[in-house]
Length: 329
Ligand SMILES: Cc1cc2nc3c(=O)[nH]c(=O)nc-3n(C[C@H](O)[C@H](O)[C@H](O)COP(=O)(O)OP(=O)(O)OC[C@H]3O[C@@H](n4cnc5c(N)ncnc54)[C@H](O)[C@@H]3O)c2cc1C
Ligand code: FES
Image 1 (cartoon, protein in one colour):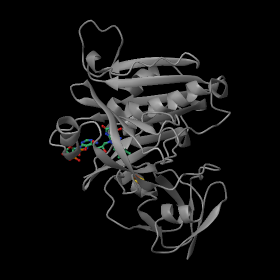
Image 2 (tube, helix red, strand yellow):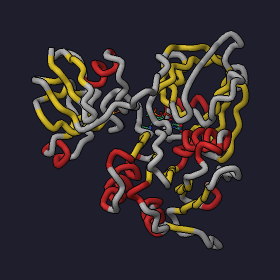
Image 3 (tube, protein in one colour):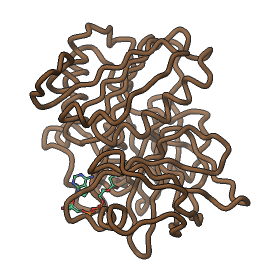
């Protein structure tokens, strides 16, 4: 049994067969995570002292990250007592994930390649989640992750935005077979892509590409429902899509101090707005990143380059949170 200590001096035990993440959970501590399978990088952490070993071959960290002591806590086990440069998520209590039955309430195309799906639980079901979390949707023996696109409303329904992937197994089901009242199972809630309350933060910045808007929408609904909590904060959303016809989400949150900046990655005729990478458009706004939190969701490429460039521009590393929509395969 080894001791794992965190930056905030919390200590827990981990045996040589368990991952750091699972041992933390067993000890009642929540560390940042999402996919739990060494794909999304959400659980990246720097080992400051001691030795660790990967359980499975690790393919997502760069050579430089590995050489400077970074590991994925969902895939690393200790070989000695270790110290990590990370804090747990404090008082947040996560609901233990379970599997629930659900039915398709509505399904509609919002664009040729994006579906809005609403699932409903049976009336006796009490599915609890925090805005920003995701679930696994299970159809027969296929399981894929999807972010919940609404703040809990107490109506036993969950909303999703689902993109069509070429030759995708679940895409094939949702875009050509799914119909109202189909039975699907839901495993969740999962992930830690939720809001962290910090009174020193002045700017809350969301970066979303494509259907990465889903958990961001849930968080914005949360903010707009309790605006008094966020009245000292300026809230920004940079939404990246290819063409202006792809802007399928037009937010209207008038109770919070909110700025929406859609960004197109391709040249579009008759477009007066922003073009390029969303992180570069964010830098153009000259926001003081030293007192900002950034929540980035969508493509892994965007998340990787945004994190790098924003940290170079004064964002504190621990104030960058992300949920990468990585492939399940
Ligand atoms: C935490 C999390 C949350 C997610 N939330 C959403 C969401 O809200 N909306 C949404 O549309 N998707 C989301 N995804 C992605 C989703 O889980 C599936 O990967 C996606 O729907 C494709 O599934 P499929 O069965 O259609 O394709 P598959 O049969 O799994 O794959 C078909 C082909 O597409 C490629 N591919 C599959 N998924 C991706 C991907 N994400 N990026 C790049 N290439 C891919 C595969 O490599 C393969 O070549 C999320 C993923 C994660 C990990
Ligand atoms: S939770 Fe560890 S890489 Fe996704």
